[in-house]
Length: 417
Length: 78
Image (cartoon, each protein chain N blue to C red):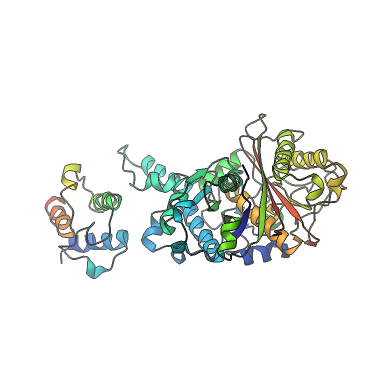
């Protein structure tokens, strides 16, 4: 069967760098850090006291006050980014077949704040269960997709994807596949995460996963730098409208780019540590390239997972060098997590948006905070340190990996009719 | 208005996001104030918390209007 072409027709972003796609992209190309001391809770006893929080966010701007109270922040973020993407797409759902428009939304953890609050209340009580009736429907990861479908009346396929930090890339790949196969005309896809609370920061601190550079939050996320000491927690949401090409053309939609490949693999190695030679990372890029019918020479930019952890950055760059060979040195590579922090389940979505905007604007957002080379990272790679670079970007590949050894990779290409 | 009645109304206004003047004694949580079944459960729990009483499920099922809530609480809050 002939697979259908799938294009990107709408984008929405709520990020530590800005609460809309233009603000986010402007922050990325300007090389701004979204990190600052945590405002959401008292960090006095915490090893890490900073994060990349979303700023000036008012859920009432996107849902009524009563609704906002009944959803976890990760759903509030989802509604905000989705609103922007839907408006941006120009889609009028009243004129479209909403039975064939779906929602696939990723989150790595979901309603952690809700879980924390409810369990804390229980623990403070006398053992009588007095759980709020919204506890479960606020917390569960799939509820974001449910809320989006209810708001817009979308009756197509609807579910969540969960693969830790790869979750929203899995959502994008699933949406891409269902449209390609003719199972739906359009998807709202992406992901959101909101784990900047005592449980999230405390939990990741216990794993020694977070940077503890409390004296300089804005330089703490420094992928590939010799002195990197862990990732910086981020939060927010990214929403992407994927649409079957003829469907988009028929309604005269603006097309950002074409999604041409998605790859998935597992490390099968360790629950949190990456494969030392980046085997899963290499395999996932191979899978995405094969899916797209492309070779390594067709890619001009890789938005890496690049979390600024000691092991992960080495294994991913090793995988790129192994796979791309000499072509690795012609590429631009960057980790936008140097600016946004790590949005976990939303990382794939916001980084896919970075890759799409890079293809649209022929501009590579930088890896900021580079001070000292790490001898374990190939110095011939162009990691786009500190300043954005202009270059023609025919296609961009975005990697996202998750605890559990889940690897995903997506490829966006300049749209040519 | 009794102290209990005003506290009940304040909870309903906050939890259901409705206007104070909609919260009349006759108003039904579900038919008039836009509550669904989960909202109603939450309201009962809030009343329990606010007035430090336990409302058994079979009693809670009988409370579907503002007035019924006030009457029940005036009778049972010590």
